[in-house]
Image (cartoon, rainbow, N blue to C red; front, top):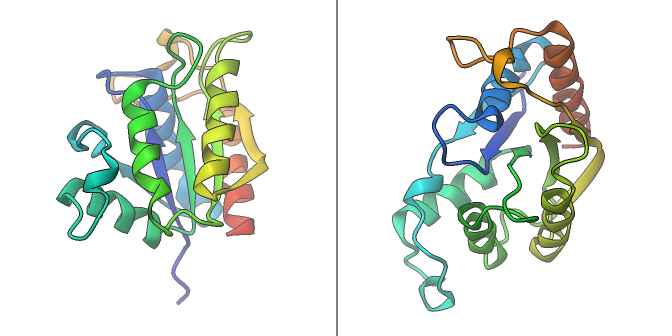
Length: 179
């Protein structure tokens, strides 16, 4: 039996009940339908502030866990909000911790933008730029706008809309195909 590739899901939001995390939880739910195993990284809040002096062995435990999760994954799918025209500081901090490691180098990465049309472009542009510094391989076919309105998220924290779920499945399949 062949094991399905693992796609690591990274949310750039720390807010409980965020539409970004709801979109990634929904991606995790639809992943088996496209032959992928999706794991949601939940350590964003535990990462220390990036300091190059601390980017040495032994790494802080939360950083070592992040790099291990990235290293295990065949690819990564990101969903992050935009704050003040760019990435949230906490998520930029996560990405800063990946620069000194080799785990993300040439790793296929895509993203879904949950923002309403006309919003989120600053986060996407910054994400593309920072991922370039990390050596990640952005898979344009796995980068998509999948807007999530508040009323779309159910009590279970998932998006039930069939079009949204189908779109997430397509993104995951495209990402896995290059991993």
